[in-house]
Picture (cartoon, rainbow, N blue to C red):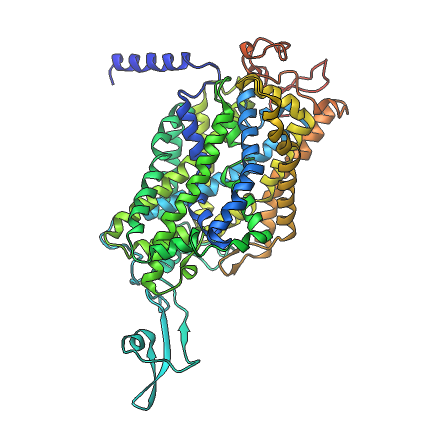
Length: 628
């Protein structure tokens, strides 16, 4: 690149920066950058490998009733609240708690859990990369029982029975019996336990899985390289923060829909596809399932985690919006897109699974699975039976890669934003080193997840981090904003951004924020704790110390809430009520947006008032510092 090109790029960057409303912090270049980033964050792996199975398990089409109701009562209200909170304050998930200082530990909990999840989430992306590279072969390596397989590997069921041939009783394979139209003697059918090639390939080749968490084994080098590549991709996409990631999502957020459409069109033309879709959301739907409490719990849990609420990412991404952006409209668009994607993905998944059931002469429930079992065993097995199977396999795993990357981008941006907000002066213009350091640190922590016991670590972190702590954070978030800060005051803040609304417009949101959503989330939290069972991976139970370690992860996140609260009260000299009120520098970042309600704020933005060395306000009696 010559000097002219360099100066041209520099001027282009300066022009782009000058167009930002908040020059210090930066804004999304276009509204579409933000929307696609939010859709990419919300639409993740769970939409493809969890929702379709939950829908089938809980009555098929009938499950959409509790799913839609839970979206309206818990998912959408919390999503709108977090988008509004981040956009109004232009602050990340930790610093935003200037609104209720005593609950700043909730923000630390969100970022802590997000950090743990980011560690193992990129390992799943590494799995997708490995399988994607493995698809570059004329014959898929899991399409048959090759030299890595044991005696239990079989593409077809091994079923035998006793039959009478020429007055002689013999034992014959069921396939042989069916071909000759012979009948089995009653109660003589024996089904031998076998494993499909894709299952053995996943455990013996891809993972080199050990017997349990207690047997760590060595690092699986090719998974470690895939993990390194995954972190390089994430770091490269985020090297300029939202300015670079906002461009990458135009591909990573849109491409999964292209692949889903291709897979659906291909799947719909296969024999058995109609039966698979019938089980998913067709005539096999069981309306009576909605009378069972389990269906409602699954619907609420899926909505809550699918929309990524209470993780901090929604607040972080929305904090880069321009102040007058219509965050209400954005919340509706993203939530509907997310839920529609989940339903649509089910058709693509179950059409292929229906074909697999047809080919293996099994019922759809026998081949249906969720999570790792669907993504790396059931679906690859089904794809291996299609013509030109490497192409379909590559497309599927590339889709998983892009689905995972969008969510990972948002999680790392959440962590980096929180760090930059904590030390705005010291880290000013140092986003790139912070991002690189963050990616390197998390890569090193993630190496334990690519050992021979790695899948047990991934499953353990997922089991504990994707549950109680986030539900607890969501409940406290609603209590803090709508009960302590005040729902009416918060609504006035929102109206400063999106304009004045009629009082009837807010009836629904008030009811959900103050009563319905907290009650629902608290009920799910209590139910989850009451029905807690120790984690397992398949039929393998975790050792007691493994379960204890999982609880330690949860406690490590939760402990920040009382610690920060105690520090805040101590610095306020015991004035409890004072630390429940917003700090002096809470409000819109820019003076032009503060109006009469926040005209008391200093001319500099709230971010710039936060310093690494906390100072105690003479007027309020507590600090206005960055973290504590």
